[in-house]
Amino acid sequence: MAKNKTASPALFPMQDTPALSGLARAAAQAPLDSTGCLTEYRPLVSRSILNRTASRRGLPFTHAINPYRGCEFACRYCYARYTHEFLELHDPADFEHKIYFKQNAAWLLEQELRSIKPGTEIAFGTATDPYQPIERRNRVTRSLLQVFARHSGLRLGLITKSTLIARDLDLLRQVAASNALTIHITVTTTDTHLARLLEPRAPRPDLRLRTLARLRQAGIRAGILCSPLMPGINDTRSSIAAVGKAAAEAGASFLAAGALFLKPCSQPTFFRFVEENFPAHVAAYQRRYAESAFATPEYRKRVAEIVAAVCHEHKLGHRFSDQPTGGAMPAHPQSLVAIQPWLPFTQK
Image (cartoon, rainbow, N blue to C red; front, top):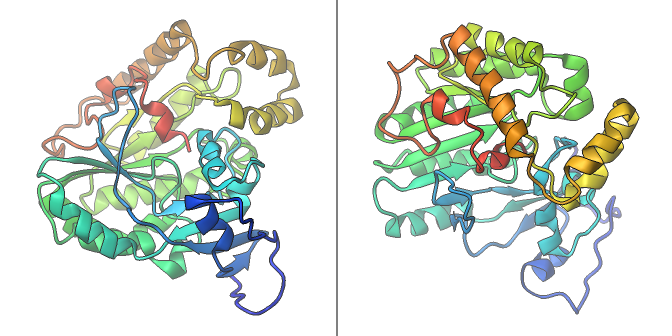
């Protein structure tokens, strides 16, 4: 990753706009830290790292941590592109090209955990993958795990597509020793070609599965999220079964899945992907998501039945030996396959 702190112009110049205020002004004034792969990286002054969730969708966690804003993986279905709108960045592509990392994250977490009660459910990576490529150098997520390793009694969940999580096996073991920790590795398909189209800059599915196996061998509770399930793309029984088989072979603790959640801000990017790769489905998708970001109850029920059958076939619903006492995400796969409303938070 090329370091670039010289006076060379930014790839995407960010003007200081006096009309901006709050977080948007902080983002606009953030100095360029470095660049790489047509991406800018900038530090972001933050007042908090542990945010209380405001959603009314029945989320199984009350607090969320996102060490980064924006995501390099450029997943075509990502619902979280809207979060850059708070920075007054309204081009959906900005989300994958302008990445912000939060300053003083570990110090902030240490202060905020003082008011957190034992048993609090905290989720890592609800909007942005906590293992962005720049994490190799910046180590923001690692610094947060070091803080959690000094605490106990919390219920933690972490969601990622990155193989970089294996770097932190030492800390994850320490965290899991005194907290209920569950790792979620997202694998939408075992088809490498389809994965490259859907998630252009994320690690290949086989590498994610290999990482899952390493986590399990280290005694970490970890499973697969096959999310999102997209009509006509990866929602067939054969596609889900392939993920289930691979998950079982990697020793996954569970398999879960959720139907595509498509906010209006994400529709242009996703519809363009469908038009280029699955043109016959364009009209159907436009109808499905014309009035709601959620799939219909009938569709959710159908795919839930498929996922439940796959879990049963590969015994992914009966691995309780390493189940922690409560986790930041529901631990039993049979509760996950019901396609709960909170699952959109796992399709980044």
